[in-house]
Length: 221
Ligand code: E4P
Image (cartoon, rainbow, N blue to C red; front, top):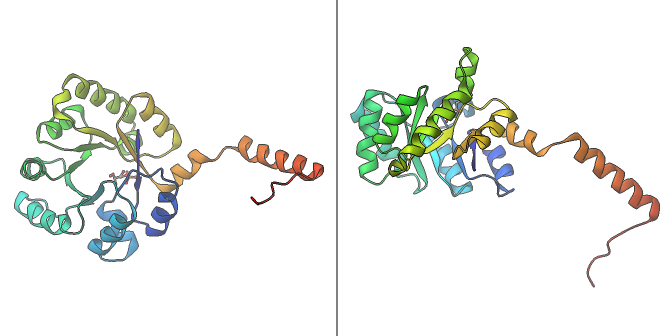
């Protein structure tokens, strides 16, 4: 399962990428806006930090505009994936870009049939938003189960299910159980996954015992 970070925070990306656990990054206009910096500049920095796909989202809502912006975003680095919304115009742009060999992430997916359309349009990734569905009392992970099942029936599309709008560690666990290809998560979730109170208390107990016995590991001669 691939782990993407869902952020435009350069310091967080740099720190977490050093673990080797980060397979890609997703950004969106809201995340980019939070940085207060030009979008192209942030994307360029992220692309230099992480080798995997870096999703950069178009702002235009019409196909021609999306394609114009995609050209600018693609020129930033070879690992840029173009993010387009799951709309009529977004699907048209996806087809054109996919035919040119560009990785497209079709975002803001909220139903299994929308996901099927993204796959047919040649998307490399489709991003169903689980947290936003949960927020309105729907079943976010149920949507992932449906999409994974449908995509399993049509392996020829090759579209990866990218679980988005993750809100907590349990979303990661459920996504893994359902065999989703990728999950993108805020840095705080990846940090929470690492932590366990029994790990911390276990280390403290081991160190106390080692200190009492005067144990040490001397440097290599
Ligand atoms: C996905 O690529 C989006 O950036 C993201 O997951 C949106 O999540 P949110 O619902 O927390 O804004």
